[in-house]
Image 1 (cartoon, rainbow, N blue to C red):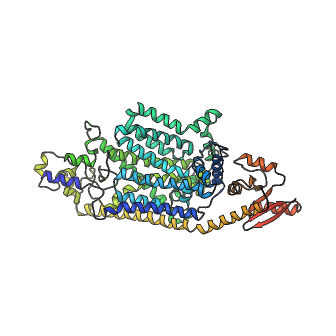
Image 2 (image 1 turned 180 degrees about the vertical axis):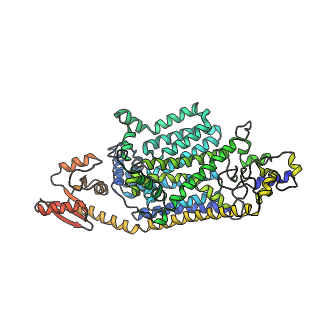
Image 3 (image 1 turned 90 degrees about the horizontal axis):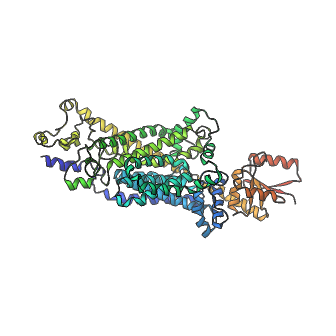
Length: 633
């Protein structure tokens, strides 16, 4: 009798039931990845999302690198944010010449890498291929804000998410993998962490969280060669940042705080509204282009609940498995892989669970494909949750959340790294596992009845044979008396319906937001055509030096491949913020520079006033959406 119960126990907790449809998960995942990449490539070929002067500044840096003229440490005009995208695009420019498409192709490749890493990490953490498909499908969608973060080479955003996923995956493999294969991964984790400290510190909460997992599980190893190798690799990745600081004596952290609005004021009500109400739906892809409708703000209420649920279940899993007696080989017996269980013939001593967490602990089901210590999966999921919480907290204390919440929501783009951990509680609840956690032994659902003595959370040993006739052996008598039909039927049903509803709302809202992003393509194409006409008009008229506003200048210079050099002016015609100072010097030295402004802009209004006051000084020419003010010969 006991043997039969244990055979059922090995099959019951699997998170991926074997069905005739199971083989479809792989092809559908491939299709979702191809669709996500194809959708973004279609956007790029239709000049969407629109480019801007910040992206053009990165393009100019890539052009200078390709020509061997400059090798910048920072994004032009500031002393933070390493221009990694410029170095990635420089080979493309060397082969095909400068263009917005060439600048964005590395960003598209980084997106594809992000999705692949997310798929692999999800399988590592849960073992559920259908859940991995869900994560990939959601990441294949892309609202206006999401595709801007992923495709515009404006500094840091395209590379942060794949870096965060890679750090989490490396951390999992370093803890759960074989000792002989870990040294290269230690070097890779360290180099990536250092590199991202140089490129964009917004991902540092995930560096810290996954690093804490490594410290907790591999402290002894870090005290030896692994720690030295990690430190050297991190220093190599952060070499541009460290070298610049040593040579100049400047602190990049101070520049970063100033850029984040640390010296500006914003009310706490505005900060919290921007960070917790507008920020999450915008930053995670649930809003229309550049705004959130009221109904799209529901994710702001769901996110804290999901963070709490994911954090609590991961913590409970970690604590419960840590409480198991350790085996001579290291991890607790309940933390061994499914293959080890099958080989030994011994059932797990944990219940299958309701499915609000990760792997093989109270309230959870063992993932079919998981091949490591489930404590590691729980620890990584907890790290992803803590990384997300820290990202929200840092954004909330910045004045940008209160002053420019719509545009600054891009600072929350890293929250997508936490998606596998956030949705796993919903998925497991929606799948409808019915066994209760050890803390709730009153459950007499189907899994509890088939699990026999193991369902109580302990292997009862010889005493189990004496109780084998009772299908609920191991459950306290008082618990059996208190568990009526209502306690065993409606609770899982309500939870399952709620979980399915939230997952459906997540997918539906993301689809609507993606449709909105697609709808911006015609306007973006038209705007790019007007800008192309402007560049052609300047070339036809022999204009090589111009003054213009910030959002016109470097875009104009990059689009003309520096045939037209531009210096920035503010709306009152005073000198503005030039990110690349040689351009200002070149325009100042020009004999008769022209002026360019969008039709109807404050700068155009000011120049029109000046033209009326001094009619012999400038001659205005209108080019479909643009005003060119040509100097008199």
